[in-house]
Length: 336
Image 1: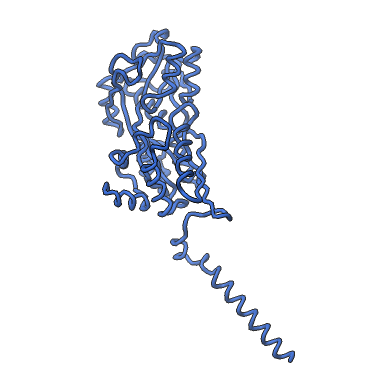
Image 2: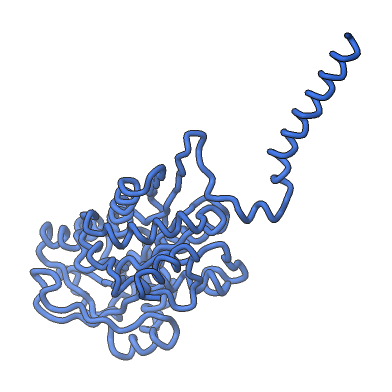
């Protein structure tokens, strides 16, 4: 009897071990990793962190609205948007695994992929394009009271050039270089338009650059406060330099873009796009993110959400890798 009981217990132990091995052995199999989905919490919820931009800019409030739309329409997904230094920082934090999603100007994303510009020697290869957000317009503003009439006049002035690691700062430096202005020729304030707006209002700075949506609520608020906001145009020669040395292109801020703007303003533009960390966002989730971003854009209350359309969906893609999940969706609707 004892022997039979011993044999039974031994067989039971072997069966338990076999089951444990079958359930856990895939973790060491490299091929099995390819089949893993986006990691979920114990309750099945997938948490994603998205880098936006500085408060007072366009990315921060728009990103919060995008997160709300996803959370309301994708089951068991919780996207949290967070303030950041925008484009370059978002891409860098995707690279090191801190962010799952990031808003960026398409041009820094090209640099990240190539390991050039702000990413010299540090390629970012674990990201892919999800979709177009809106056109980014470089808007250069000052006040009539400063006596500044052109970008060339910014020599020796106090200028907000955008936060460190932002697309605004990269674009601003290029524009200033087009006018022969280099670091040290002006007093640089590295901050987003929210802080810059306050400093323009109280006279702490003389001018500000911002890659912003059009129209931008912050500029409207500044005009409502001071009633003497002035746009500085980018000259044809400077636009030519910018187009030769970057992916930015000429753009006209038309009279009436702001109710109080009475003349056309020559400017430069690129595209704001959404990218995802390919290490943490799988194909199924990327498909849902792209689909809801486009098809439920009417639920997004931010004015720039009007640009999230089929017609614009691939604007800014260029040579960036398109996430396979997003590509599947765009193929389904016939635009890829």
